[in-house]
Image (cartoon, rainbow, N blue to C red):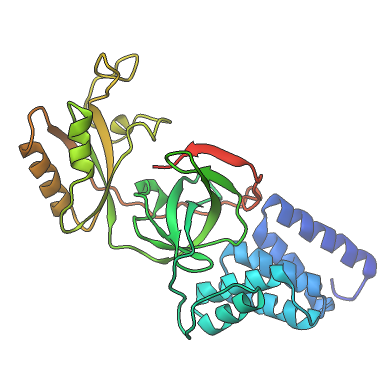
Length: 322
């Protein structure tokens, strides 16, 4: 638009909202920007542009437009405060983040720097714009959480990563024993990458006790050993990594239903620690075998502007935690 035309402005605003609703964030941000050239004091336009930049992970722009929307509104708005707090946290602007959380009435530890506390167990959906997996995490901040599961290598994440998550949950997830649920939040960005890489190990465990001995074992450099055998059912993990083995129709290798072929995700600082852990485990019992150790590294998948992935259905998820 070269001049202010109310009808063209109305059309462009409708197009901007529609683009946002389709998940076309780059286009939406551009169109909201064009509208602001002619309506620089429009609160809702600053809010929407800040929101689009949030999901684009363009944190400086998101913070700028949310703060501008707050200033123009002149009063407290919870959504603006949350979005400003998220952007300030991403930028490490702890004074601004603390200011926003205080406005929201959230109790936070005193101090000037990062917020370090325990805000409870949550489930985090990684790479929510794609086919993201969900993992358990401990919130250390209003919108920061430390991952407690070993993520799939394809996720580009690691055990103990600190991620920035969105403010509104998109569902709930049952804990392992099923006695309670925890909110599911979409991860928005990785703020601190862990030194614990993901290793994939394939082992032969004659009995469940053999597996328990391995998952409970500890060594320096080992963060966590997770049994992925039954939790990753959408494809054969061994086949995907080229580890030779035989299939049977039931997927079980013993009459009692115990599958001796176990697929493990191990969060470790290096392969030497994984090899030592597994070799010591093999030496402690008969019938134990290492079939393979893989050390895949993947970058996080590219964000695709294809749908409004940030919207949840507020329905309780039925999956169980590990």
